[in-house]
Length: 104
Ligand code: SF4
Ligand code: F3S
Image (cartoon, rainbow, N blue to C red; front, side, top):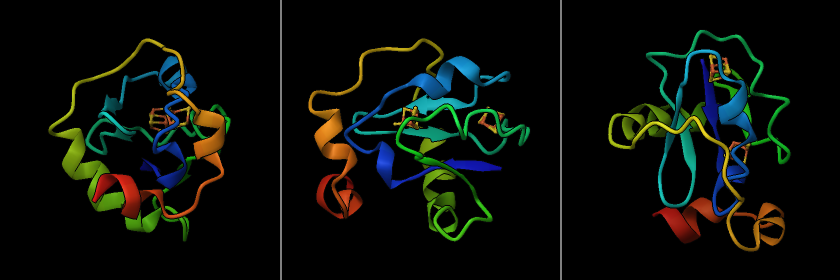
């Protein structure tokens, strides 16, 4: 399965939601996640994200996001329509340690 990772936090470009053929994406206040129960591993969302937030869960940068995507996809509503990125998304895209700062 694929997972949404750190780069999405405070960015939410939402290009990913328009390409997923099975509507996997779920939306929280600070980021999106992928529902692993629904993802068919088609990989089309990976290049759609302008900040490379989407990775396979087998990728070293993806593995630690697996539990978070699984847990929060059960709590957050589905999102299938693209919206404006978050304010200052360009600035936040380059910030490290966003999980520690904004999601913990
Ligand atoms: Fe959707 Fe395919 Fe991305 Fe899974 S890999 S979230 S099915 S676009
Ligand atoms: Fe997030 Fe990238 Fe989608 S920033 S909302 S994973 S296009």
